[in-house]
Image (tube, rainbow, N blue to C red; front, side):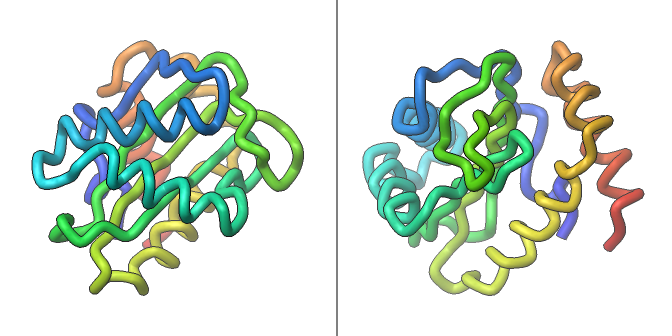
Length: 155
């Protein structure tokens, strides 16, 4: 699965702002629900909080990958947020995050979760990609960066 199969320019938030992880998850759940009418923002927020209670999805290197299973979703779908300011996500490396890649999957697609996590981690591990994304002003520019680098990073 390619990143372009998970997100579209309309699901990329450039200039995202949140004071902390809780606010970020709440805002992302609301935005995700706006784009996916079968999703209730409150239920998604609860599912994300439940997952975070197991351990932070802040994987380090300025990246967080919050995710949750949601029965109203037909296929794995994502959203990407870019914050100029670091957000405290209680990441594994203790540093704040600039990039939040949210994805939601159906209960039937649990195996897909591992594939998406690996793909996002591989794509967002490169500092040059970070720099390019932080300088992007439009969602379409971020999408172009993803598509170009996703092709380079493999399958």
